Structure formats: C-alpha cells, structure tokens
Amino acid sequence: MLKGKTALVTGGSRGIGRAICLELGRNGASVAFVYAGNEEKAKETLTLLAELGVTAKAYRCDVADFTATQQLVKDVTDDFGGVDILVNNAGITRDNLVMRMSENEFDEVVSVNLKGAFNLIRHTSAGFLRKRAGRIVNITSDAGLMGNPGQANYSAAKAGMVGLTKSVAKELGSRGITCNAVAPGFIHTDMTAAMNAQILETAQQLIPLKRLGEPEDVAKAVAFLCSDGAAYITGQVICVDGGLRM
Ligand code: NAI
Image 1 (cartoon, rainbow, N blue to C red):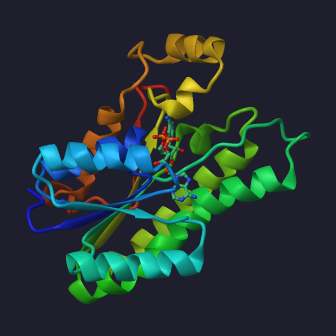
Image 2 (image 1 turned 30 degrees about the horizontal axis):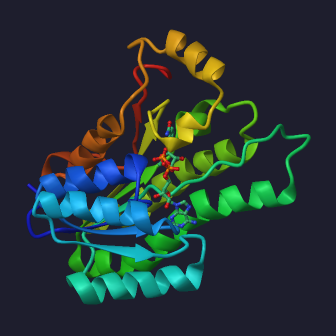
C-alpha cells in the first residue's frame, strides 16, 4: 500500500510514535524517525522495524530547533531520496495550573508540540510541492479540542496544531498534498503512565468504549490517512479516543 514511500515520523522512539513507525512499515513504507535523546529506545524501535524487514534510520534532533530540523530534512532526503509522508508526533507535557505555570513551562511545550510541527512542515513542503504529492498527519490531542485543567500550555499548543493543519491543508491542497490531524484521547504510553491513577480511572468511566486506547489504535488511523484511500480527506481532525469527545 505504501511501497516505495518514505515516512518521516517525529518522536518515533517510543509510545504512539513507535507504533506509527511500525504500522507504516508494515504497510510497505521506509521509515526515518526522529527522537529527542533516548538512544536505547530508538535502537529498540530500529530492531522492531528490522524484524519486519523495513528499511529504517533513526535521527537524533530537537524538533523545536528550526535550523536543526532543516538539516534533518536534508539528511533524510540524502539518505532516502525524499520524503512522501510526514507525521508530526513528537510531544511533551509540562503540566501545572495556569496561575502557577512558569514562562518556561509554557514556552517549552509550545516550542516542541506546535513550533516543532511547523518546522517540519516548513522544511518538507518544498519537496512535497515538487512531487505534487504528500501526506502530512499532525498528532494533536483531545485536550486541544476540549481543554484540560492543568494543561493550558499543552491544550493551547495542540489547539494551535489544529489551525496549522487546516491552513496547510488549504495552502497545499491544490498540489495533491493532504494535511490532517489525529486527536488521541487517553492512550496507554509513558505519557499517561506518569498521570494520576485516579484521573485515569475517572476518564475510563467517561469513555463510551470503557477502556484506554492503545498506541496501535492511533497508528491505524494515521496509516489510513497516509493511504491512497484517504486521497480526498484533508483538513480534518480524526478523534481516536473511544468516543470521549463527540
Ligand atoms: P511519549 O512521551 O511516550 O513519546 C514522545 C516522543 O516524542 C518520544 O519519542 C520523544 O523522543 C519525542 N520527543 C519529545 N520531545 C522531543 C523533541 N524536542 N524533539 C524530538 N523528539 C521529541 O509520548 P506519547 O504518549 O507516545 O505521545 C505521542 C504524541 O501523542 C504526543 O504528541 C502527545 O502529545 C500525543 N498524545 C498522547 C496521548 C496519550 O494519551 N499518550 C493523548 C493525546 C495526545
């Protein structure tokens, strides 16, 4: 389905990003993924991709750094011959109540989640335009659509990604390039493992499907948006949240 395509996935060393790398690889894509610093976890993802027979390479890069991401896209283009699919998945949280939130907690979250997605889109878009094809998927969050106490920074960044997605979809649509967002709800990853157990239990009660999601649930939606079958879908936000937000 994605044979001959190269996917660039940010935050591929673990969690949802790793599941996306594996799912795109299973669908035939070669995979270049970015990670922040955990060499061990990046190697684990590479091993899992190798077991599937997927051509893959890991790149250590801070997505918040405009110049470093420019070099990253050059390196991936040199190594793989171009980028056909971009998945902006890298994300962080620095939770705090807004009245206690430091400037740094706000800036860091916006820089990684929102500016990181802009940086990658900015540096890959010329290649997409030349090919008159491309798929961009931004991983936002239910928090960006509903808000979440203690996550003003994260919710603002994720809401910003929705505006980014829709603007990019309108700018690049005439060249056959789609840009969509996927909004996970509560998914079993290191990010949710760090959350208060009581909050997760309460959330589970509110989820119509009565369970937390798995990284693979999100990865399947991303793979669909990258497939030929999704050629007429752009500017959309697909919630993968067990029905939490409807
Ligand atoms: P995670 O914390 O397990 O993994 C985050 C990944 O992002 C790691 O691979 C890390 O290396 C990378 N990363 C972090 N900062 C980076 C930077 N500055 N530069 C490059 N890479 C960086 O996170 P998880 O749970 O897998 O989440 C993935 C995405 O899904 C995030 O954007 C998150 O906001 C979003 N999401 C997660 C939900 C959940 O329940 N786990 C719910 C809604 C959205």
